[in-house]
Amino acid sequence: MRLNSLALRLFATSAAWTLLVLPLAGYIIYSLYREDVQLSFDAQLKKLLTQITIDSMSTTGDTPVMPPNLYEPLFEVTQSGWYWQIRPIDGAPGRTLVSPSLATAVLPSPYDRKFPTDDTGTRWMNVPGPTGTTIRILEFIDSPGHDPANTKYSIIVAGPLDWFEETIARFRTRLTTALALVGLGLLGVTVFQVRFGLLPLHRIERGLASIRSGEAERLEGQLPAEIEPLQTELNALIESNQDIIDRARTQVGNLAHALKTPLAVITNEARDDETTLGSKVAEQAQLMRDQISHYLDRARIAARAGVIGRVTPLEQTAQSLVRAVERIHGEKGIALVVTIQPGAKFQGEKQDLEEMLGNLLDNACKWGKSRVYLTATIETLQASSQRKQLRIAVEDDGPGLSVEQRAKIGKRGMRLDETKPGSGLGLSIVSDLAASYRGRLTLEASEHGGLKAVLGLPAA
Image (cartoon, rainbow, N blue to C red; front, side, top):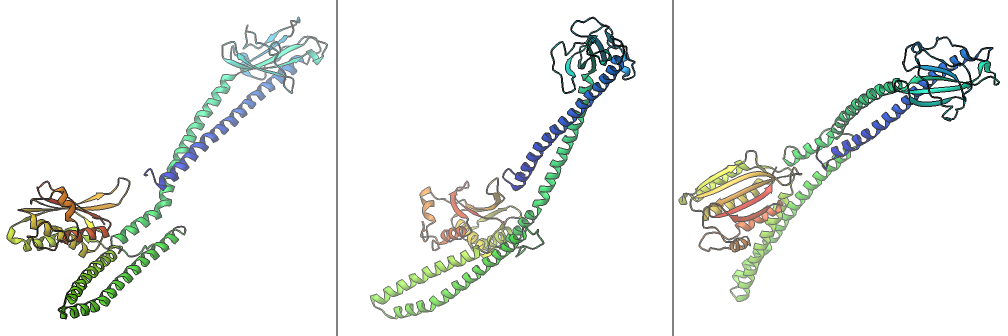
């Protein structure tokens, strides 16, 4: 997933929601379970207190009786954490009774520490027990025979909180493990969901790549209902583009035929007139013909450059041009060194590529001494983009050009040496053709001593 991608956005929002909800749900479940265990623990203490109070205070005398240990076996185990204690309050004389588990220790009284009572008249307190571990104390004040006139006694039942905390800790560990596994599973499902959900977009990407490479003319295949309108609109756009190009070609052809005959008539009439006016008219008519031919050629180039799906293999085209140029400049004995990256393809018309490469190779052979180098590589325009560029470099080992000369040489009709054959239009034509494909031609100094012409074109 790239940083700026729909997949990362969808995954990040889903992962953030999962990481927010699961801990919150875990906290709620943990709190409810803790509260439930706390209520269960308190209910057990209350039950033991009630039973001990009934058995010890339901007497006809004025002193409590020893309750039978029929409630909790741990009351018989010394310092087990489960204790009960009965003793008079406010320093009144009376009998003190304790469970065997308490031995000689004494439990503190919530009544003595001024703890308030709850709705049932009992008091709660958490304090360190005889062994140093925290215990929970429950206390109730009553009199033997339940007679207010008799001495009041503090009846205490205590239970260990370490059992309660261990139970909660075990549950917390299991809950954390379970939620972590659920979270990892949800993140995995989210990745699959994002990939599966965006799969139709990858199909569209591959379909458009097939159209640009000339393997297909339309976006085909069944797509989801949400993306199907996009497929329809893209196909309509491709058809509209083709129709516009066809109409442009037709109009260019009609214009060329419409102007050729009148200009031919004007030129012939002017040539028959041997006056100064006739000569001037013939000169201007020829200039008009040249300008019309130039701009009609540019219109044809622009129309061809806009065609989707035109792809030209570079290696085959270059090899045929190299053979032709070697024959033309055979008397100079120039060797052409060709290095082309395998699979390099030009996104455009073959005749335009031939025109550009032909002009560059012809110029290099004219000025080179013994060798001309043709190198082609595929480059990525940006690290975050998948757009590719075809970089074609044509170099010679001739005298080369200065910076000022390289700035002038690209101008239409500009020639630095009139002794060499040509019209001075070669590099201008190459520059115009490259610009029509949103590419560019640059001139540099070659490491071989001559001129280096670098052509940047869209790669298929």
